[in-house]
Length: 567
Image (cartoon, rainbow, N blue to C red; front, side, top):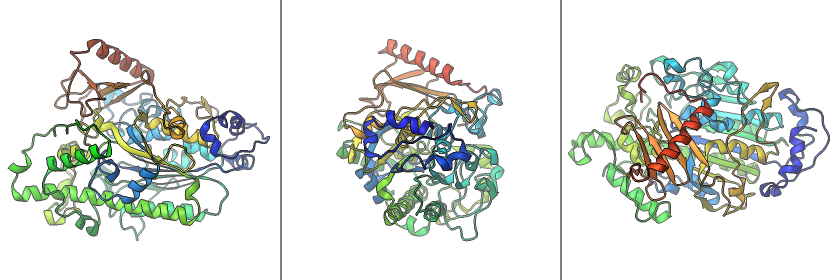
């Protein structure tokens, strides 16, 4: 019997599988990719479709559902109908998060121990630091493809640049992807001088944008709809992976979207931050006693800026909001397509951001300092195709309210993101889940729903790491269900910045100016902004968690870089 069929009996006992109809029959040995066509003939499909939507650098409080002022009715509606996550964790940046999402394995094992653009000399050629998804992991797209799923992807890949490490080589039937971390949203202009023109691949083969390309968010959505429409009459379920490059910099959006937010941010950072926090209190996302974290910056306060500088700073956020607004509109079109074609009710939809909003001063790095001056960044031209501006550290911290700092950091402002899952077949919907979840939990959850053993140790004749994430099925089908207990810990490391969370306690180690170059201890149950360091108050808890981080680093092959981090 195939593994998919063998698992029918065991998985059917899980409460979530009560929503699926199964029929088991005999078959041959475990199928490979080429034999996948025979698999679904023996497993009666009312297996659910899967749609994963990933926003790029979307902050924790940017959506209306999380207290934001940006107009996001489609995502808000999906989150309200589904299960909203308040404690969902990812890596500090995009590529490591995507590696863990696709595999359920820690990024230090999967090949993205560091961003390929920032690998230190002592990390090069070391296991786990290949800069692409290595052969020691198997993706859920490969597993689902083997099991008869149609697999499609459109958007940002960033976990392998060659054809052999492209989506076509890791389980996707059709794909159109931006290979690297970002690009111009209106044309083929690259992210910097070394990535120009922007690199794209279609079904594994190098390509460029079509002549009718208008805007990244529109194109990726329409491309995925095209793939789904071409096979909408198929009896096979689908796995669709839509990975936007919005609202990642450069900040660019259609003028009509930007115009909607004219004047919205004229009051400045602190006013918007406090307004978001107050809405979060009304939504029950934070306690009524919660305070907004300090906006860490070397720049003057809003009131000390010139009128022109305030206009420039407000315009940054207007464009960012416009990008999120446009993304929401296109998600609405995708949902409408699924409903019109009768596929929505049987589709599990998971939405998430890949990390916190970007606040690092990347414009000061040589690769950007030499690139940005070629663009017209005047006030009137900001947001156009020939402009190149970033959100920068102050608005990024507003975006991450009520958490500290932003992307690239192991503080919750870098690794805690908005996320929710929507599916009428789950018993726990129209609710909120406050338990700790991790991006590695996605793969075992979806694989279980597909009737597959979520973790394997061999694949196509090679040894692979077992899944490290935990299935979320208990939480999805029981309001009282939990995924992690008080004794289940999670570790992080990126750019030599470190963290470990266990229950309500979290330790963080960051170099200056972001931290004291020493371990800090926070009680997240009363201090979500990580403002009150309790290391001296509870040294025994600090020592225990630091020891557990050491164990995490050893198990996952963490190699600290031998040069100062660039971020």
